[in-house]
Length: 288
Length: 236
Length: 109
Image (cartoon, rainbow over all chains, first blue to last red; front, side):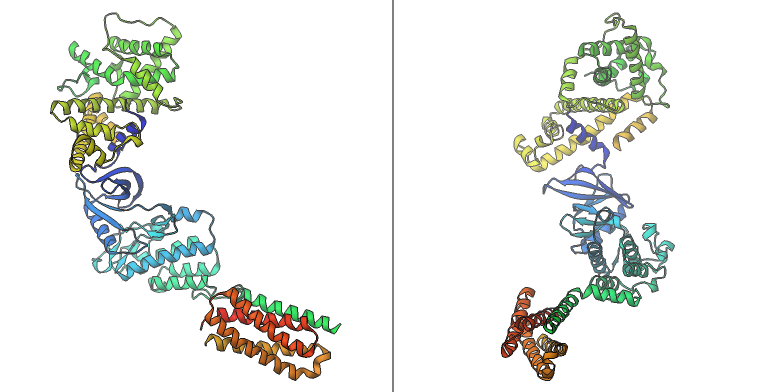
């Protein structure tokens, strides 16, 4: 008799692409991106779980795999393997990331500091890619994973482009809410500031205080020239906010400035006040 | 298990054949494919005892053959499986109402069926609480389909002197529990093969298995369109 | 600015301030100049020591303890010279040491 687990296993054999002949066995679907499906799979040689991305069209995976393999950074998923299925589709195997997608992670109770911390790590990763001539072009919370040990990874570089490879009018791809206007129009001159736009949109969804919203709006400007000119500048402003210093994007009122000053120098102010209180107390005692 | 004559693609179409021997062959193949799901379904949905379920199952198929139940099947309107189940429900409901003694034997006999085996399987399946009988029937039918293909695979491998190939498939992909599955290295050791051989034999067995499943599925479908739809549902 | 310099200046400044507050005590008002000078010197010396300590020891807790101890000690000497108002002199003095210690620790030199 075919048991329940065996029945599931055999059904799975029909439900996915044919990976016979490779060293991988498909286990389940992890997610579907615009450019292919990501499966949880088992590497039968090394006996470990991997994420297997199988492309709809042959050229997709080659491009993505090549880009990923070149970018070695803690925030970018390492590529383990690359190959071709019997039906001609290409696949690549990457590290299996355990954790939450950023949109789900944000939905849980987190204070602003924690969220901004994660956001800064995303910025770091994107800045690294930019420094190596790669723009992501599809940044959004669904493409960021927060691992179980706090590691932050930017995924789905499927439509990433190398800056020097952008030929003529680029294909319109990306996710509408997070797509920079120049990208939506299909301009040839899409550069790394498109990623700044997307990061601004992401930040807006996190922001709850005025200075952060101001930063987000600046990054999210429709005009590329009005945004932060690179990711580092955006990250620097966010860092300033976290350090309790004034933020470039936000004009403070005097009362805001005083409040910020008070928050930043809480302890020294407290000490000085304590001293004054004690002094005055003793003076009063000594008088009477 | 009776292999279906290669000249015909579809059991259901063959059951409308003018030739009695073709009709009979087709009918046997149909019973083989469906008796287990029918039995289990009657047991669970209609709360029949094992003996009653066995009687009802046999009577249902006999009546279906005699009265040509499936002649009215229109593949554009429903899946054959759903159609059969509807006929079955109707049949059992009437039989219960009439409370008549079920006719057995007579002019037609069925192929030999081991209801005991089905009953044992039923006992094995933990928690027989089913809320979706449609899904349950589908799953049991799928189980029968895979079992049929696995049997054919075994026979084919034996005929070609490739018992190892089936052994690898059986121990790896038909292992009852996840914990029972050996690693490739284990399999290699057990069967005296190299690890590469294991990978290759398993890949070949799976390819063959897939082909056999699709072949068996094709036999059960009344038309190409139905087969397309069914195989798409299977392949997800 | 180096940490020692910063702590010294701060100590001196607070010392002046601390000394000036004794104006509110009529009994000692006529000795104000002396008190202020003494308090300033006390603040400068304590500042040097606390600054040096904070440069060597990177532990906030220890720097604070040291600050309290040093300033408190000097304040004790002052009180001992007069023979009275021990608590009233030592307590604020120790607090000043706490402030200088904290500021010295946090200062980026």
